Length: 240
Ligand code: SF4
Image (tube, rainbow, N blue to C red; front, side, top):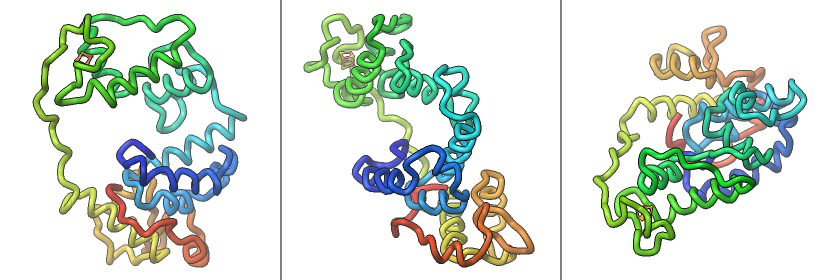
């Protein structure tokens, strides 16, 4: 949820989510339509589909695997998430660098393979996250207060602005998000009245399905289901 959405917006949604689906098994038993609705407004809705598929895979195998290689076989889990879960949930002594941590390592130890301190992978990874997020920030790192400054070859440098994300307004992502909201609100929409290109893309990503000339959320069996489960917030989706 935090990948593209601010913490303040995520926290209440995260707590609501856990109230509704406190276990992997509970989430696995939900319909895709319910999960997509509950994700409404958090953006990048494919993550909701992946999370649901992942919960189903974990429930089917009777629990999470602990090894990063096995975690990576689950839907939606890439190398970073696999390493992070293995380290933070199962105590694996491995690096789990996110974007912020990678930035610190590339600046402070360029070209080096920095070993994880034995037995301290959890603290080491968390410290790199914090350092990258608070001190070694993207454009103007705060080297004056950095604990790595004494030995850092990048100390004092500033960096060009990062490439900005393409505008959401007027984008294809916006069209997808709008159509998904419309389908979720209506329960079903005549296929002929939908943005065809956006609908194809939603179907391909498992966010919608078409049957009998109507578009609907996947796994939605009746209109009653949709009206009984309104979107959990009224905010607009920032991406689909
Ligand atoms: S000294 Fe500056 S560039 Fe080096 S790690 Fe610290 S904040 Fe980043």
